Amino acid sequence: MTGTIIYLVISSLVSLIFIVLGVNQFRSKVPVALNTGEVPPREDELTDMSEWNHKHGRNLIIYGCALFVTMSVFIYFLEKFDNTVFQMVVFLIVIFAEIAWLEIQHSLLKKKLIKKT
Image (cartoon, rainbow, N blue to C red):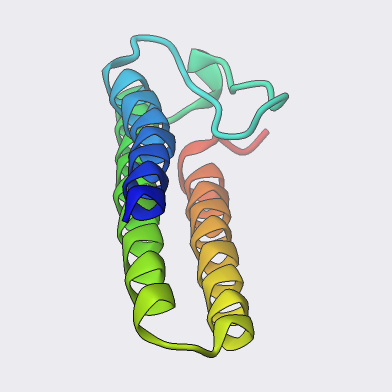
């Protein structure tokens, strides 16, 4: 039981990092970047900077919440069922799918909101 509590606390903290980043990006007055090391576009390169920041912030908030739910469901099933390898494979697929969703949303926003040169 103690291990489960520690796991859920760590899961909450990791998810909270993404939620806080999302809130900061949502409120930002300058263009934000999703990926580490990526240079954010300048204001004059965007068709709507407010929409750019709001959608990136929203996506990170959704990702943080989905990550917490995924981790919580994973620990629940880990305690209830014995097939750990199968659960790990499913867990990793879901985590990578969430990251892929975040990247796809970022790419769509780049296509929609960055002005063509």
